[in-house]
Each structure stands twice: as structure tokens, then as C-alpha cells.
Amino acid sequence: MKEVCLACGLCPLWKQPLYNCISTPTSSFINFDEFASWWKKFEENAHDQASRFVYILTNGRRNFLAADDFKALIQDLIETLPSLSFLKEAVAFHQAYIKTVIARIFWNACHSWKKYISIVELRLSNLLQAITMLESAQVNEEREFFSYEHFYVIYCNFYMLDKDEKNHLTPSDLSLYSNSALTNLVVQRVFSGAVLPNSSMKQTLDYTAFINFLLAEVDKCHPKSIEYWFRIMDLNGDGRISFDEMERFYKEIMANVIRMDMAVITFSNLINMLKDMISPHSSTYFTLSDFKRSPPLARYFFNTFINWIKHIAQESCLPDNRNGVDPQFNDWNRFCKSEYEILVADLLDSEEETMAGKMSNNLI
Image (cartoon, rainbow, N blue to C red; front, side):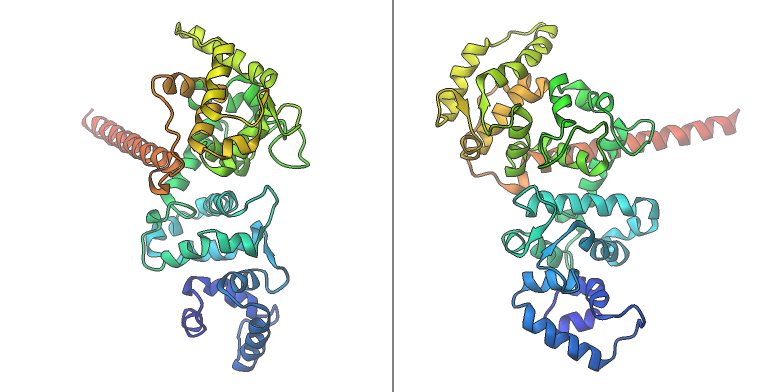
């Protein structure tokens, strides 16, 4: 099918979904007449790469992509990309990698919180270019969707919290995130269903929901992250973050700062500082558009109320309000690079200890 893709002007890495789209349940063999008939219909309905991609992944049934539509493509990448050959052998991790990639696709390509990606959103995203890039690049060079290193960091962060391996997190589990950096109110809001439309209070957080949380917590400059934390702090859902709502979050931040015996900014002084920095449209509340004007200032704002450790750290330096953020050096990529190095070093230390133990036992 790779040769067929090339002959048709399609990305060779679409080969498995293309085969699935053309073949029938009763026959795994595709003859020329069947292909020609399919191609005619395909050409009539799909006129650019984005619409062709959607047509192939959905078997021509829809003009949007759902999560399950990506599974065959990603599974084929696992089985055929040389830079994922080690993952191919680790079958137990296939589903986790697939879920991670799909979650990141929706995080970066879907402009809403709906469970589908439109053709327009696909055109505006980097997804098709990223898939094409994988033909010639190492998978870890693609950092927006497919990086194995990023998957490993996400997966390890989840299972460091899911100590009893139940495949979901409770509020008690999440409260331990990053040395208990989140306040009780923040943890409560993450489980409240505030982020997703038409969602309700949940007792647990599954792996995909944790991926969204981690992406939002690490890189608060990302447009989706800004929306995520805005919804968390908008306690009454009126589309505004009022000073009263901010004070509820800040009281818990202050309690942790005081516990560390560090100086605390009074709430009134904090409000004045944030108003001067962000210049909200209203003098009594903040809106989503106020934060989207300057993502770095949004990061400063949300760190102030969400993560008490980051709040303390950022008080030692002024926020950078430049809007131009190089995606190769954003907060997420820096976090993954640092975390991956730590995880690999810990793994090597563990292997050395195991080897030393075996040698010691042999000597006794």
C-alpha cells in the first residue's frame, strides 16, 4: 500500500487507513476495478490533503474526525516506524501510546472542547505535516503529537500517582502531584467537571483526563491551557473570574506560603499588580480574552492561584509578557526534556543497583 499511496500523491504513512477504507469485510484482496471505483468517489468528495485524510480515516462516512479514527494509523506507526521498533516489541504499552497521541492530537488540533476535529481545524493544525515528517525524521524530533519521550514522561507521571495501579486517579492521588503543589480547591475543581461541556462531578480521573491536566498544568501559555484554568477558576460558570473567586483560591495559596515561612503578598496588593500587568477590560473581573491577549501573563496569573510552588518560584522574577513563544522551547518541551533525563537517570541507577545486588549475592 505504500507504493499505492505514493502513486496517488498521498502520504505513505496513511497506508493502513487507506487499505481499511478500500477493503471490504468479505475480502482482504483489492483488485484494480475496486480501487478505480473507490478512487472516483474519493476524488469527487475530497479535494485537498485535509479532506482526503478525513475521508480515508472515516471511510467517507463523516466530515470530521473522532478519537477512534486515529487508532489504525497510530498502530501502524508503532509497527512500521524504525524509531518506534523498541515500542513495537513492548505490546503492553501500545494502547497507552495510542491514547497519549490521540489526546495530544485533540489538545493541539481541536479548537474547542468537543470530541471531534473538523476539516477546517485539521487544515489549521500541524498534524498532517507532523505525520509526513515521520517518514524521514526520528519520532522524538516531532514534539507536538508523536514523541515517544513525551509519552514516556506522561505515562510515568500518571503511574507515579497511580500507585495501586487501578488505571485512574482519585482526588487523594492527584493531591500528591508535584510534591502536593496543588491546593485542595484546585484538586476539587479538576474533578468537578468544570472543564468539559455538559460534564458532571467525577470520583476518578482516567488516563486521558490526566494527560489534559498535565498539559494544562505544565504549559499555561497554551491556548487550551488558558481555557482549562479559566474554567477551573470560574466557580459559578458566568464567563468571568471575579475578585471573590480569586480570593478563594488565593487563601489556600497563602496558607501554603505561610507554612513555608515566606513573605506573602496581600490580596489587595496582588489585585492591583495583576490589573496593572494584564489591563483587563473590566475593573472588577477578568475574562478569557484578557488572558488570551498575552499568554505569558496568563501563565503568571494562573500560577499565582493554582500551584503554590510555582507561585513562590515566579515571585523571584518578573513575568515575560512577550507573545512570541518558540514552540520548540516552550514550557512543555522544556519540562519533557528535563523529566525524561531524570527518569532515564533513575532507571540507569536502578539497573546498576540491581546488577550490584546480583554481583554481591554471587560473591557471598
